[in-house]
Amino acid sequence: MSDNAPPRVSRRGFFAGAAATGAVAATAAVMPKIVAPVAVETAAAPAEPKPERGGGYRMSEHIQRYFKTTRV
Image (tube, rainbow, N blue to C red; front, side):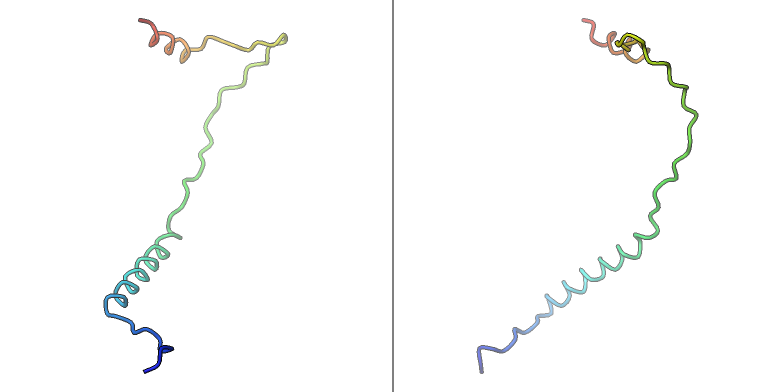
């Protein structure tokens, strides 16, 4: 017997390889069917004009709700 002989393949290795190949094939078969949701255009509120002298901070509803949650 020579030391250059290729290693023998065991049954366990064969079935592990077959299972991995099957998992990859199943994933590849499913991947084209996954579709990103189509972006639906929503009616956005018109943008308010920018302030002339900087600033731009406004007390909106969500900011008021936040301040209410921070009160002790």
